Image (cartoon, one colour):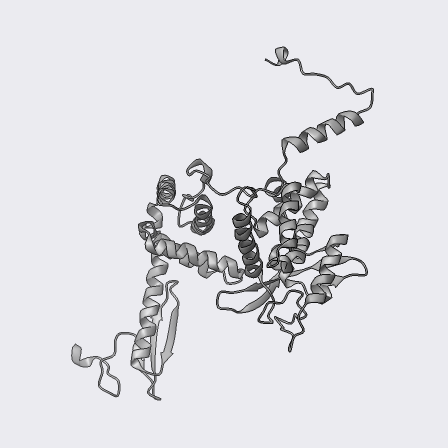
Length: 403
Protein backbone atom coordinates (compact mmCIF):
# COMPACT_ATOMS: atom_id res chain seq x y z
CA UNK A 1 0.00 0.00 0.00
CA UNK A 2 2.85 2.36 0.85
CA UNK A 3 4.21 2.12 -2.69
CA UNK A 4 0.97 3.49 -4.14
CA UNK A 5 1.05 6.72 -2.13
CA UNK A 6 1.38 9.93 -4.10
CA UNK A 7 4.65 11.83 -4.16
CA UNK A 8 5.63 15.34 -5.24
CA UNK A 9 8.24 16.15 -7.90
CA UNK A 10 11.00 15.81 -5.27
CA UNK A 11 9.92 12.32 -4.30
CA UNK A 12 8.39 13.28 -0.97
CA UNK A 13 5.35 11.25 0.10
CA UNK A 14 2.20 13.36 0.30
CA UNK A 15 -0.24 12.95 3.13
CA UNK A 16 -3.95 12.33 2.79
CA UNK A 17 -5.61 15.44 1.36
CA UNK A 18 -2.35 16.87 -0.01
CA UNK A 19 -1.58 17.19 -3.72
CA UNK A 20 0.86 18.99 -5.99
CA UNK A 21 -0.58 21.09 -8.78
CA UNK A 22 0.74 21.44 -12.35
CA UNK A 23 2.47 24.72 -11.48
CA UNK A 24 4.25 22.81 -8.65
CA UNK A 25 2.40 24.60 -5.87
CA UNK A 26 0.52 22.57 -3.27
CA UNK A 27 -3.03 22.32 -1.99
CA UNK A 28 -4.69 20.61 0.94
CA UNK A 29 -8.36 19.60 0.93
CA UNK A 30 -10.15 18.96 4.20
CA UNK A 31 -13.52 18.98 5.96
CA UNK A 32 -13.94 21.79 8.50
CA UNK A 33 -15.60 21.54 11.91
CA UNK A 34 -18.97 22.33 10.30
CA UNK A 35 -18.73 19.51 7.73
CA UNK A 36 -17.89 21.74 4.74
CA UNK A 37 -15.18 20.84 2.22
CA UNK A 38 -12.44 23.45 1.94
CA UNK A 39 -9.01 23.92 0.34
CA UNK A 40 -5.87 25.89 1.18
CA UNK A 41 -2.89 26.56 -1.07
CA UNK A 42 0.83 27.11 -0.53
CA UNK A 43 3.99 27.59 -2.57
CA UNK A 44 5.99 24.96 -0.69
CA UNK A 45 5.18 21.70 1.08
CA UNK A 46 6.55 23.06 4.37
CA UNK A 47 4.29 26.12 4.17
CA UNK A 48 1.30 23.89 3.34
CA UNK A 49 1.92 21.68 6.37
CA UNK A 50 2.18 24.71 8.64
CA UNK A 51 -1.28 25.69 7.42
CA UNK A 52 -2.49 22.12 8.00
CA UNK A 53 -1.29 22.30 11.60
CA UNK A 54 -3.20 25.55 12.12
CA UNK A 55 -6.34 24.02 10.61
CA UNK A 56 -6.15 20.94 12.83
CA UNK A 57 -5.56 23.09 15.91
CA UNK A 58 -8.54 25.24 14.98
CA UNK A 59 -10.76 22.20 14.46
CA UNK A 60 -9.64 20.73 17.77
CA UNK A 61 -10.31 24.04 19.54
CA UNK A 62 -13.78 24.21 18.02
CA UNK A 63 -14.58 20.65 19.04
CA UNK A 64 -13.20 21.28 22.54
CA UNK A 65 -15.29 24.43 22.84
CA UNK A 66 -18.43 22.71 21.56
CA UNK A 67 -18.00 19.95 24.12
CA UNK A 68 -17.02 22.26 26.94
CA UNK A 69 -13.54 20.71 27.04
CA UNK A 70 -11.60 23.90 26.23
CA UNK A 71 -9.71 25.60 29.05
CA UNK A 72 -10.71 28.83 30.76
CA UNK A 73 -7.78 30.53 29.01
CA UNK A 74 -8.90 29.26 25.60
CA UNK A 75 -12.44 30.46 26.27
CA UNK A 76 -11.20 33.94 27.17
CA UNK A 77 -8.97 34.07 24.10
CA UNK A 78 -11.93 33.05 21.95
CA UNK A 79 -14.11 35.73 23.54
CA UNK A 80 -11.57 38.56 23.36
CA UNK A 81 -10.62 37.56 19.81
CA UNK A 82 -14.14 38.50 18.75
CA UNK A 83 -13.86 41.98 20.28
CA UNK A 84 -11.96 43.77 17.54
CA UNK A 85 -13.74 47.12 17.74
CA UNK A 86 -13.04 47.86 21.42
CA UNK A 87 -11.03 50.80 22.74
CA UNK A 88 -7.29 50.61 23.35
CA UNK A 89 -7.68 50.59 27.15
CA UNK A 90 -10.12 47.69 26.86
CA UNK A 91 -7.59 45.72 24.81
CA UNK A 92 -4.99 46.40 27.50
CA UNK A 93 -7.45 45.04 30.06
CA UNK A 94 -8.01 41.90 28.00
CA UNK A 95 -4.26 41.31 27.76
CA UNK A 96 -3.90 41.82 31.52
CA UNK A 97 -6.51 39.14 32.32
CA UNK A 98 -5.12 36.76 29.68
CA UNK A 99 -1.62 37.02 31.18
CA UNK A 100 -2.98 36.23 34.65
CA UNK A 101 -4.72 33.11 33.31
CA UNK A 102 -1.56 31.99 31.52
CA UNK A 103 0.31 31.98 34.83
CA UNK A 104 -2.49 30.61 37.01
CA UNK A 105 -3.62 27.00 37.35
CA UNK A 106 -7.23 28.17 37.06
CA UNK A 107 -6.58 29.06 33.41
CA UNK A 108 -6.07 25.37 32.58
CA UNK A 109 -9.41 24.24 34.04
CA UNK A 110 -11.97 22.84 31.60
CA UNK A 111 -14.87 25.25 31.38
CA UNK A 112 -17.46 22.50 31.83
CA UNK A 113 -15.87 21.59 35.17
CA UNK A 114 -15.93 25.12 36.64
CA UNK A 115 -18.59 25.58 39.30
CA UNK A 116 -19.68 28.74 41.09
CA UNK A 117 -17.80 27.70 44.21
CA UNK A 118 -14.65 27.11 42.12
CA UNK A 119 -14.80 30.67 40.80
CA UNK A 120 -15.45 32.04 44.29
CA UNK A 121 -12.60 30.06 45.84
CA UNK A 122 -10.30 31.30 43.08
CA UNK A 123 -11.18 34.90 43.86
CA UNK A 124 -10.52 34.41 47.58
CA UNK A 125 -7.15 32.86 46.74
CA UNK A 126 -6.27 35.76 44.45
CA UNK A 127 -7.00 38.20 47.26
CA UNK A 128 -4.89 36.19 49.73
CA UNK A 129 -2.05 36.32 47.21
CA UNK A 130 -2.22 40.10 47.10
CA UNK A 131 -4.64 40.95 44.29
CA UNK A 132 -6.80 43.97 45.14
CA UNK A 133 -10.57 44.15 44.92
CA UNK A 134 -10.47 46.37 41.84
CA UNK A 135 -8.13 43.90 40.09
CA UNK A 136 -10.43 40.98 40.89
CA UNK A 137 -13.38 43.02 39.63
CA UNK A 138 -11.51 43.64 36.37
CA UNK A 139 -10.80 39.91 35.99
CA UNK A 140 -14.46 39.10 36.56
CA UNK A 141 -15.39 41.78 34.01
CA UNK A 142 -13.78 39.62 31.32
CA UNK A 143 -14.55 36.11 32.58
CA UNK A 144 -18.25 36.67 33.25
CA UNK A 145 -19.15 37.70 29.66
CA UNK A 146 -16.81 35.02 28.26
CA UNK A 147 -18.65 32.30 30.16
CA UNK A 148 -21.97 33.95 29.26
CA UNK A 149 -21.03 33.55 25.60
CA UNK A 150 -20.65 29.82 26.20
CA UNK A 151 -24.02 29.75 27.99
CA UNK A 152 -25.73 31.63 25.15
CA UNK A 153 -24.40 29.06 22.68
CA UNK A 154 -25.66 26.16 24.86
CA UNK A 155 -22.13 24.99 25.64
CA UNK A 156 -22.71 25.45 29.39
CA UNK A 157 -25.94 25.35 31.39
CA UNK A 158 -24.98 28.07 33.87
CA UNK A 159 -22.51 30.94 34.22
CA UNK A 160 -20.23 30.20 37.22
CA UNK A 161 -19.34 33.89 37.54
CA UNK A 162 -22.93 35.01 38.11
CA UNK A 163 -22.44 36.18 41.71
CA UNK A 164 -21.70 39.37 43.65
CA UNK A 165 -17.96 39.86 44.03
CA UNK A 166 -18.41 41.72 47.33
CA UNK A 167 -20.07 38.61 48.82
CA UNK A 168 -16.85 36.67 48.33
CA UNK A 169 -13.89 39.03 48.69
CA UNK A 170 -13.31 42.09 50.84
CA UNK A 171 -13.67 45.45 49.11
CA UNK A 172 -10.30 46.98 49.96
CA UNK A 173 -10.32 49.46 47.07
CA UNK A 174 -9.22 52.97 47.92
CA UNK A 175 -12.14 55.33 48.40
CA UNK A 176 -11.99 58.43 46.24
CA UNK A 177 -12.41 61.39 48.52
CA UNK A 178 -13.54 64.69 47.09
CA UNK A 179 -11.60 67.69 48.34
CA UNK A 180 -13.36 70.01 50.72
CA UNK A 181 -13.45 73.74 49.93
CA UNK A 182 -10.63 74.27 52.40
CA UNK A 183 -8.52 71.51 50.87
CA UNK A 184 -9.10 72.91 47.39
CA UNK A 185 -7.92 76.31 48.57
CA UNK A 186 -4.80 74.82 50.18
CA UNK A 187 -3.91 72.77 47.10
CA UNK A 188 -4.57 75.41 44.47
CA UNK A 189 -2.73 78.07 46.51
CA UNK A 190 0.28 75.78 46.71
CA UNK A 191 0.22 75.18 42.94
CA UNK A 192 -0.24 78.87 42.14
CA UNK A 193 2.68 79.96 44.36
CA UNK A 194 5.16 77.13 43.76
CA UNK A 195 7.99 78.11 41.40
CA UNK A 196 8.09 74.65 39.79
CA UNK A 197 4.42 73.75 39.47
CA UNK A 198 2.69 77.09 38.97
CA UNK A 199 3.00 76.58 35.20
CA UNK A 200 0.31 73.90 35.59
CA UNK A 201 -2.04 76.08 37.62
CA UNK A 202 -4.32 77.00 34.72
CA UNK A 203 -4.64 73.38 33.62
CA UNK A 204 -5.77 72.47 37.13
CA UNK A 205 -8.24 75.38 37.19
CA UNK A 206 -9.90 74.09 34.02
CA UNK A 207 -10.08 70.50 35.24
CA UNK A 208 -11.40 71.46 38.66
CA UNK A 209 -13.81 74.00 37.18
CA UNK A 210 -15.31 71.74 34.51
CA UNK A 211 -14.97 68.18 35.83
CA UNK A 212 -14.11 66.88 32.37
CA UNK A 213 -12.16 63.70 31.77
CA UNK A 214 -8.43 64.32 31.35
CA UNK A 215 -8.35 62.59 27.95
CA UNK A 216 -11.16 64.92 26.83
CA UNK A 217 -9.18 67.93 28.07
CA UNK A 218 -6.04 66.76 26.22
CA UNK A 219 -8.11 66.28 23.07
CA UNK A 220 -9.34 69.88 23.00
CA UNK A 221 -8.32 71.88 19.95
CA UNK A 222 -8.55 75.61 19.37
CA UNK A 223 -11.67 75.08 17.27
CA UNK A 224 -13.44 73.46 20.25
CA UNK A 225 -13.24 76.72 22.24
CA UNK A 226 -16.00 79.26 21.68
CA UNK A 227 -14.95 82.31 23.69
CA UNK A 228 -17.76 84.42 22.26
CA UNK A 229 -20.45 82.11 23.64
CA UNK A 230 -18.17 81.03 26.49
CA UNK A 231 -18.60 77.34 25.91
CA UNK A 232 -16.46 74.30 25.03
CA UNK A 233 -17.42 71.52 22.66
CA UNK A 234 -16.52 68.03 23.90
CA UNK A 235 -16.96 65.26 21.34
CA UNK A 236 -13.64 63.36 21.31
CA UNK A 237 -10.62 62.46 23.39
CA UNK A 238 -6.92 62.03 22.73
CA UNK A 239 -5.15 58.77 23.58
CA UNK A 240 -1.55 57.60 23.28
CA UNK A 241 -0.77 53.90 23.23
CA UNK A 242 2.22 52.35 24.97
CA UNK A 243 4.05 52.15 21.66
CA UNK A 244 3.79 55.95 21.38
CA UNK A 245 1.08 56.04 18.71
CA UNK A 246 -1.46 58.84 19.13
CA UNK A 247 -5.07 58.53 18.07
CA UNK A 248 -8.36 60.32 18.58
CA UNK A 249 -11.44 58.38 19.63
CA UNK A 250 -15.01 59.27 20.44
CA UNK A 251 -16.02 60.14 23.98
CA UNK A 252 -16.46 57.27 26.44
CA UNK A 253 -20.22 57.17 25.80
CA UNK A 254 -22.64 58.99 23.49
CA UNK A 255 -23.63 61.04 26.53
CA UNK A 256 -20.05 62.29 26.60
CA UNK A 257 -20.79 64.51 23.59
CA UNK A 258 -21.74 67.82 25.18
CA UNK A 259 -21.00 71.53 25.62
CA UNK A 260 -19.43 72.82 28.82
CA UNK A 261 -19.92 76.43 29.94
CA UNK A 262 -16.86 78.52 30.82
CA UNK A 263 -16.90 80.10 34.25
CA UNK A 264 -14.94 83.35 34.59
CA UNK A 265 -12.03 81.45 36.15
CA UNK A 266 -12.00 78.82 33.41
CA UNK A 267 -12.32 81.49 30.73
CA UNK A 268 -9.25 83.36 32.04
CA UNK A 269 -7.20 80.18 32.49
CA UNK A 270 -7.93 79.04 28.94
CA UNK A 271 -6.81 82.43 27.64
CA UNK A 272 -3.61 82.10 29.68
CA UNK A 273 -2.94 78.60 28.34
CA UNK A 274 -3.31 79.91 24.79
CA UNK A 275 -1.00 82.86 25.47
CA UNK A 276 1.65 80.53 26.91
CA UNK A 277 1.25 77.92 24.19
CA UNK A 278 4.65 77.50 22.45
CA UNK A 279 5.17 78.48 18.83
CA UNK A 280 5.46 75.27 16.87
CA UNK A 281 7.55 74.60 13.81
CA UNK A 282 4.77 72.30 12.69
CA UNK A 283 1.34 71.71 14.18
CA UNK A 284 0.95 68.05 15.13
CA UNK A 285 -1.99 66.33 13.47
CA UNK A 286 -3.75 63.26 14.82
CA UNK A 287 -6.50 61.57 12.82
CA UNK A 288 -7.38 64.84 11.11
CA UNK A 289 -7.34 66.92 14.32
CA UNK A 290 -4.82 69.73 14.82
CA UNK A 291 -4.40 72.86 16.91
CA UNK A 292 -4.33 70.97 20.22
CA UNK A 293 -4.58 73.25 23.24
CA UNK A 294 -2.03 71.45 25.42
CA UNK A 295 1.48 70.91 24.04
CA UNK A 296 4.41 69.14 25.76
CA UNK A 297 8.14 69.88 25.65
CA UNK A 298 8.56 67.75 22.54
CA UNK A 299 5.98 69.90 20.72
CA UNK A 300 3.50 67.03 20.78
CA UNK A 301 0.00 67.06 22.28
CA UNK A 302 -0.18 66.32 25.98
CA UNK A 303 -1.96 63.14 27.05
CA UNK A 304 -3.41 61.95 30.35
CA UNK A 305 -0.05 60.63 31.56
CA UNK A 306 1.46 64.12 31.43
CA UNK A 307 -1.17 65.53 33.78
CA UNK A 308 -1.07 62.47 36.04
CA UNK A 309 2.68 63.04 36.43
CA UNK A 310 2.21 66.74 37.11
CA UNK A 311 -0.19 65.93 39.95
CA UNK A 312 1.96 63.12 41.33
CA UNK A 313 5.15 65.17 41.40
CA UNK A 314 3.39 68.19 42.88
CA UNK A 315 1.77 66.00 45.55
CA UNK A 316 5.16 64.56 46.47
CA UNK A 317 6.63 68.04 46.92
CA UNK A 318 3.62 69.27 48.88
CA UNK A 319 3.90 66.39 51.37
CA UNK A 320 7.62 67.06 51.79
CA UNK A 321 7.09 70.78 52.47
CA UNK A 322 3.89 70.39 54.53
CA UNK A 323 4.02 67.04 56.37
CA UNK A 324 1.57 68.37 58.98
CA UNK A 325 -1.21 69.12 56.46
CA UNK A 326 -3.36 66.18 55.39
CA UNK A 327 -4.90 66.20 51.93
CA UNK A 328 -6.55 63.43 49.91
CA UNK A 329 -4.16 61.83 47.44
CA UNK A 330 -4.64 64.23 44.51
CA UNK A 331 -5.36 62.54 41.19
CA UNK A 332 -7.27 63.41 38.04
CA UNK A 333 -10.15 61.31 39.39
CA UNK A 334 -10.22 63.33 42.60
CA UNK A 335 -10.52 66.53 40.53
CA UNK A 336 -13.50 65.14 38.61
CA UNK A 337 -15.00 63.72 41.80
CA UNK A 338 -14.59 67.08 43.55
CA UNK A 339 -16.27 69.03 40.75
CA UNK A 340 -19.27 66.70 40.76
CA UNK A 341 -19.58 66.79 44.55
CA UNK A 342 -19.30 70.59 44.59
CA UNK A 343 -22.09 70.93 42.05
CA UNK A 344 -24.31 68.40 43.85
CA UNK A 345 -23.77 70.12 47.20
CA UNK A 346 -24.57 73.47 45.59
CA UNK A 347 -27.97 72.09 44.67
CA UNK A 348 -27.54 71.47 40.93
CA UNK A 349 -30.31 69.34 39.45
CA UNK A 350 -29.06 65.79 39.01
CA UNK A 351 -30.01 65.61 35.31
CA UNK A 352 -28.04 68.77 34.56
CA UNK A 353 -25.11 67.41 36.54
CA UNK A 354 -25.33 64.13 34.62
CA UNK A 355 -25.12 66.13 31.37
CA UNK A 356 -22.05 68.09 32.48
CA UNK A 357 -20.27 64.95 33.67
CA UNK A 358 -21.06 63.12 30.44
CA UNK A 359 -22.52 60.11 32.25
CA UNK A 360 -24.82 57.76 30.37
CA UNK A 361 -26.33 56.51 33.65
CA UNK A 362 -27.56 58.93 36.29
CA UNK A 363 -26.77 56.25 38.88
CA UNK A 364 -23.07 56.81 38.22
CA UNK A 365 -23.50 60.49 38.94
CA UNK A 366 -25.35 59.82 42.18
CA UNK A 367 -23.58 56.80 43.58
CA UNK A 368 -19.97 57.12 42.51
CA UNK A 369 -19.02 60.76 42.19
CA UNK A 370 -21.01 62.45 44.91
CA UNK A 371 -20.95 62.11 48.62
CA UNK A 372 -22.15 64.47 51.29
CA UNK A 373 -21.08 65.26 54.81
CA UNK A 374 -22.76 65.95 58.13
CA UNK A 375 -22.12 69.70 57.84
CA UNK A 376 -23.69 69.91 54.40
CA UNK A 377 -26.63 67.67 55.33
CA UNK A 378 -27.30 69.68 58.50
CA UNK A 379 -27.07 72.96 56.60
CA UNK A 380 -29.54 71.74 53.96
CA UNK A 381 -31.96 70.48 56.63
CA UNK A 382 -31.97 73.80 58.46
CA UNK A 383 -32.52 75.73 55.23
CA UNK A 384 -35.47 73.52 54.28
CA UNK A 385 -37.02 73.86 57.74
CA UNK A 386 -36.71 77.66 57.65
CA UNK A 387 -38.29 77.77 54.19
CA UNK A 388 -41.19 75.50 55.17
CA UNK A 389 -44.57 77.35 55.24
CA UNK A 390 -46.10 77.97 58.63
CA UNK A 391 -48.98 75.61 57.81
CA UNK A 392 -46.47 72.75 57.52
CA UNK A 393 -45.65 71.62 61.05
CA UNK A 394 -42.15 70.45 61.85
CA UNK A 395 -42.71 67.58 64.23
CA UNK A 396 -40.48 65.49 66.40
CA UNK A 397 -40.80 61.72 65.85
CA UNK A 398 -42.53 59.76 68.61
CA UNK A 399 -39.69 57.35 69.34
CA UNK A 400 -41.76 55.35 71.83
CA UNK A 401 -44.40 54.51 69.22
CA UNK A 402 -41.75 53.72 66.65
CA UNK A 403 -40.06 51.37 69.12
